[in-house]
Amino acid sequence: MFKVPDKTKLAEKALQTAVKCCKEDRIKEAELVLNQLVKVDPKNHSALLLLGIIAHKKNQFKQAVEFYMKALAVEPDSTETHNNIALSYSAMGQFEIAASHIKKALEKNPDSATYWGNLGLTYRQAQKWKDSEAAFEQAIELNPNDPHMWLNMGGLQGDQHRLHEAIVCFEKSISIDPDFHPGHVDLAYALALNGEWKRSWYHYEHRLACFTQCQRIWQTYDPRKMWNNESLKGKTLVVWCEQGIGDIFHFIRFLQRVDAGRIILEVPDSCKRLLNSDFFEATTNASKEKYDYHCSLMSLPSILDLSCAELAMDSPYLGPSTSMDLGYEDKIKVGVCWAGNPQHPYDAARSFHLSRLREISNMERVQLFSLQKDVRKRIYTNKPDQLVDLSEGCEDMPIVDLKEKLNDFEDTAAAIADLDYVITADTSVLHLAGAMKKPVFAVIPRHCDWRWGTEGSQTIWYPTVTLVRSTKFGEWGDTFERLKSLLSEETSRFPPE
Image (cartoon, rainbow, N blue to C red):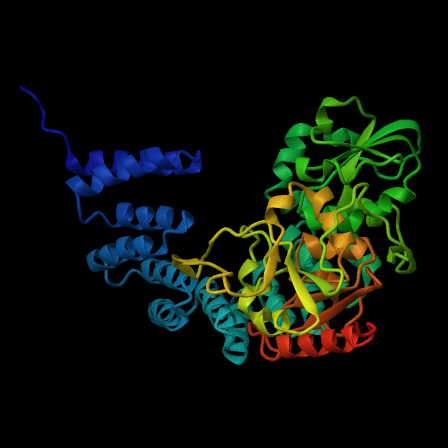
């Protein structure tokens, strides 16, 4: 006689299989198992919760909330479910709903430092600084030895440009755990914003242990051959960059300070033609070369122990070997680039809509040229169902589109060389034009990248770059009115026709 399977044990086994698949990053298999499980047992709280977590990690936040709500219907008092619902609503930018769910979790579990911390993060995203600080304080009081709590508080202080307080918090996080890499990296950012470059470079090295893109490096290059300023006489050094193209243009200046028998620089194909040099060899796959040492391009200031004065640039260090005649010799030629890489985590803050340059495009003596290569529609995590087109409605603007002429950065550099000015968001074009010593107006959000500091219109990195800063967190305000005024003042120096 056949024994009837125990449904409870089968469900437990299926759930264990799904959890194992998730841990091994076999997400599709986990979803198949879980979906079958909820068909058989639609009130399986753990399965519904795990399906929600998977959907959230895939940035499918609405679907995540649907699963969580089903789980909540099964167990209305589940604080974990309320907390997870809050995280998904926060990701969609619906901060009030998110806060209400975390508060429900806190009603049941007021001593959870994690929930207080998540409430603080939600208020931080909503720019409710005082409420955020109060929540983080409560989290720290409950768990003062969790470095993440101090990291969160430091990030909040950094958002408000309270750098001294931020630095204290980040230092506290790494005093609790000296190997807490995110604390070191955020401390590096705060120190850089504060102009404390030498200390910043030291702590910034911890990015190599926690940035996900560095995993490829350790799979490709021998960790035992990391260069730490040993003599390179007669030796071959491979230099790679784990971050963006703008970072390559920014930090390539430091290669001139490396005394090696041979330097091989790994670059994307789009940069190879521009970065041909007698001083180093540019290649797209340096790992195939024989080498004695390797290092990150962005580690050079730390390895070489450079002073602040040694970071600056007095002359152009990049430029095209070809030329491009854009015409319009009777006009003041201004190149524009309004958006960076859509995958950048802060793209929504640093990129801007092309229409903001409409008044400048109508200036009598000015002709705009688009240097924008990436015109893809964007998806931002807080607007997961909305495609954002940053040039929508701008078809009538009098701009010469150079996209078809810009096959790589050699072409972009050639175009920039024939321009009088460049207006750009914080993108690779900013760094390229700055490295070419072209006059640049860089439009920078208030919560800006670490290299631009917190105030002032000048930067140690590029003498011809003028920083046009937003004055309010998350808003452009009068930034573009000031930009037009600055450009008008500059172009008034051009002799009349």
